[in-house]
Length: 432
Image (tube, rainbow, N blue to C red):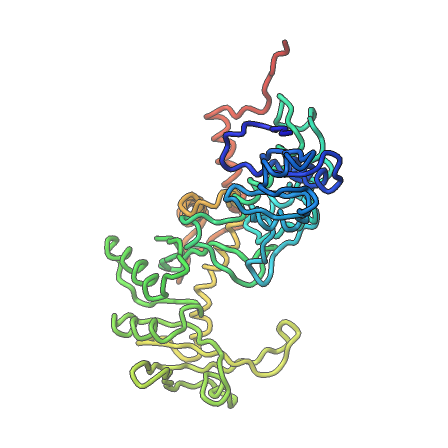
């Protein structure tokens, strides 16, 4: 006796053989239904059915129920775990650590998984039985938002599972741009961007921004950004870099380009590293050579700055700072203050949260566009401050930042857009 639950022509269907009143067979059928797995339920009433369907002479010779997968593989008296494993739903964790673990794949767990994955969190969803929980057993759900034609609990759960998997797995376009780093704002996954600023008379303006791929070298990033300056006919008098660029290839490359630069040195080692120079009570200049092997080395000027904390951040004593320099004409005692000019870069990044465009779309091109819009808005604000909300004084212009903050400019823009395009705040939906 055969009971076909759906079209038997589907080659990806599974077959389940068992006796009519088998509790084990009912449990498997319930699991397959709730998991939206198409299957044929084939009842084995007597030896004749057993011989015809399984080519086994008597029912007593086999352990029932039997499940047959599309590739012809059969499992006798399977457990739910064995079936789920064969369907590819039970896997070993791909990563050593996750940003979020969710226990229970009911509607709440699935919703949490979708939202977490869409925000870039590395998420694992753990379910001991079938996806969907109690809702998965409902034959018809009539009051779920977004489904006016009603939907079965199993189908709703399967759609949610597919959506979570879709968000959780980066596409080939996204994967090269996703970085793994120390957790921040609840995630280990980030998109990285490199920016190029120009500083002229204390006026900071962003000239270029580039999305950084995981395999991009620091030398390649610098080369790309410096190439943007050529079309603008800007000569570099001094290049400020952050400590992320402190490595042998970058130092060697900038020396070859003959570009004056400075960057903080990463405090490494004690005997042969940078820390060996942290001694004494006065600032001084020296040279240092980093050697990886006999053909991979670089020698550079190293300036050691000795400062006294004087209770700053509740700390006392000597603080040592190290800077890699090349053809810098700055006084040794002033290099700390000179390098602080670049802190405008960080403050600009902090401003990003004020006018950032929030999205759960992982498309790196779209995200780069949004980042570019942010920097463009900050550039406009800086120029308005410089041209209209400042005055000349000896040495540099006096900027009245508090009179026109970035939030105020964004508010003006928002009002102008709403007047221009008449933003709709409510929609009338007729009945009947």
